[in-house]
Each structure stands twice: as structure tokens, then as C-alpha cells.
Length: 101
Image (cartoon, rainbow, N blue to C red; front, side):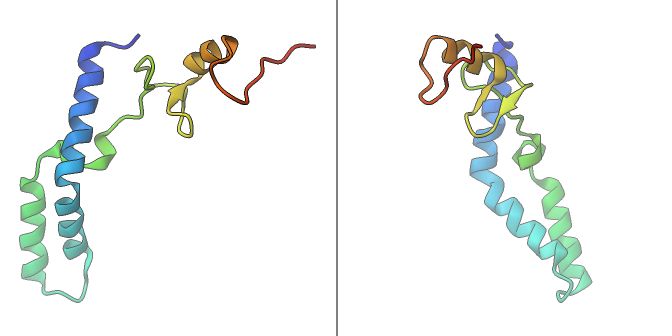
């Protein structure tokens, strides 16, 4: 089980991205637009630097929804390999059968 503080920090980052991510994307589009004047692009980059760091999508860490583990994460299932194995052993994941030969 991961530290609760790390999981909560990541959840807070997800909430900030959801709230301010669209504004950040709009500012980044202005900065990258070569057809605008240099002053407009520079002003947009200054506004972008004023935004909170946690509003960037790259700062959100993929974590297991069951245990909070940050490594060995399957995106499709939103859980780690260890949690997947435990749940599959108990037959709680449909379509997955433990192999034996």
C-alpha cells in the first residue's frame, strides 16, 4: 500500500489539471502559434508561467486504483500488476483465468 500522502497529492494534482488544464492548453496554443506577434506570444508565455505547476498534465502520476502503487501500472485496467494478480486469483476480474499446466 502506498503512502496516503502521496496518493492524496496525486489526487489533488488531478483535480487541479481538471480545473485549470483547459486554460493552460489555450495559453500553450498561443505561445506555439507562429502567426501571432512576438509580443502576444511572450505575454502568453508570462501568463503560462504564472499558472500553478500542478496544473500541468505531465505532473500527474499513474497510480493503481486499488493500492496506490505507482509502478507496474496497466493503463487499460487502471491497476498495478500485483493487484491484478490478487484479484484474478480470487476470480474477481472477468475474462482472466490463472494459467496452469
